[in-house]
Amino acid sequence: MATIIDGKLISKKVREEIAADVAVFKEKYNCAPGLAVIIVGNDPASQVYVRNKKRGCEEVGFYSESYELPESTTQEELIALVERLNADDKIHGILVQLPLPKHLDETEVLLKIKPEKDVDAFHPYNVGKIMIGNYDLLPCTPAGVMVLLERYGIDVSGKKCVVIGRSNIVGKPMAMLLLHANGTVTICHSRTQNLKEVCREADILVASIGKPEFVKADMIKEGAVVVDVGINRLESGKLVGDVDFAEVEPKASFITPVPGGVGPMTITMLLKNTLTAASIARGEKD
Image (cartoon, rainbow, N blue to C red; front, side, top):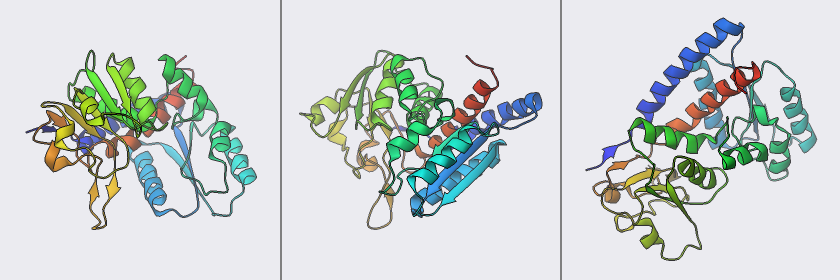
């Protein structure tokens, strides 16, 4: 039976570490790291996520601002808000909750966020820094996966790593972080041939495709580490990942559950990025 990777437990420990660092930061600078979150429209999932971010800020002692804008917000209005927050010294991190309503240009909005305040690490400047391995800010979900592997003593170096999914938010940066940790990395996607055979070679398999219970036991080798980034709601209301947990768990050595695996780490790494951004703003890092 696999060891269950407990994201809730690790997230709690990391937040305690962040809170301790924030207390030192406040003592030193007489201010708190500041995070601004912008949400446009009334997408229920986004609203829940924003509430959780606000709660996380309170938990670690951040200063936070939330902007809930109407669906009718124009591109110009949204960019004006981003630029005002760019110039606000109290705010060290700016997060625009995606997806935006269809009439807004996400790419243009994200480009307007100062790279040093881009705590989602979506700006091309930060993406480039991740590519060359000289980064300060990391996409939150892949960063969370790396922390989970580290805290469970799973060494990536020299291992065959397979990432299913090539999104800019998870798949691509996940592959780069595994590569920087000296893994030998393969990215699979909808056009990959012989997907099962490729996945069965993986010592570490990361699934991030948004297809409920897609990864079955015949797609992994005995003793593989299986990381499930997916979160899908079935018609029954049950939340499941991209991995068929019941099938795969007996065959894996380590596995993340859904919920309670990677998910709790995402906001925690957002908080860590914000603290890093605040430290850089104060000249603590180059």
